[in-house]
Structures are given as C-alpha cells and as structure tokens.
Length: 234
Image (cartoon, rainbow, N blue to C red):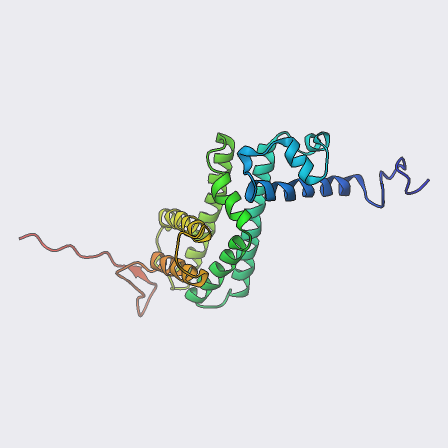
C-alpha cells in the first residue's frame, strides 16, 4: 500500500529514509550545540546524555556517528561554514566598493554571525582545542581556508591599486589569530568594548596589512611597496 512503512518507496509518515536520517542528524547536532556550547561541554558529555537531549536512542546515535568526536567535528565545520557564507555574501554585495568599505562590511558580517550565538564561539574557539590530532588537523585546515580567503581579497585589492602587491600569507595568518582571540575574549566579557569597536579595530588591523607603512600608490603606474630607509653608518 502506498505510504505504508513497508512500501517500496521507503517513505514513512510522509518522509523518505534520507529525510528521516537528515532529521535525526540535525537533532543530534542541535542537542550537541547546546551541551557542548552551553552545557557541560564536550569532554563532560556522554553519548547517553546527548541521545537523551536529542530525544533519540543511543542505537540511533551510532547509526549517524562513530563517536562524540565526530559530532564535534561536524559542529566545528558547521560553525565555520555559516560564517564563511555570511562573509561571501557580504563580499558579493560590496564587490565594487573601495577596499575600506568592503573590509568593514565583510567583518561586520563575520562578527555578527560568529557572535550571534555564544555557543558557536565556544565550539569554534574553545571546545575544539586539544581534543585529538585529527581535530587539530581539521581546525588548522579550516584556518588555512580563512587565510587563503584573505590572501585572495588582498590580491584583488592589489590589482585594483588599493593594496601593496606582496605575499600576504604570513600577515593573514597572524591576523586570523587576532580575529579569533579578540572575538572570543569580547564574547567572554574580558574586553570592555562594543562589538562595533571590536570590528573597527579588526578593520584597522586588516587595512594596515594591506597598506603597510611606506607604501604609496605610484601616480603613473601600479602601486609599489617602498622599504624604509636605514640610516647611514658614520
């Protein structure tokens, strides 16, 4: 009979097997976001506690994940993917604006997404640290993607004559560390500033990377970076 649990279509209660599995996975991840990000934390959560919070069984948990580390890994990627989507959308909206305006819009989008839910900050900046070599590799790989995104923006700005034409990778890597540290400390209440002030500071740092001291656009050609002159020895 169509629509019955044993129908060849595999549909039950109007949902396919794939849809039911996706819903179970979402419920586990939602419960983990609460337990890891606001409750006892990843290291103090058990599979049984997570399953109970999700309203599902431990058998269903092991149908979706091998262990709790898999859940944390999925949450970490989810947080970063959401932030990246917000950044790319802001970049698309400001594609033809000056670099300062573009940087401001991009970082406001990033900050709004990351700080909009304190649980996500804890997942991305606290719970993921030191769990295992596998998750450390994932964390560093995801950071490398953010570094490459900044480098790509820097290259385009340099082509437009709005930034110094140089290898920005080292500076971008250091800058990502500043972003993560400052936003985490602000969200934890350790920084006495508004979110607008935090974003403005990050934008100033980024622009100082793109336009280092001594760099000026050439009036009749592409911009160049002028090294600071050393005093002559007497």
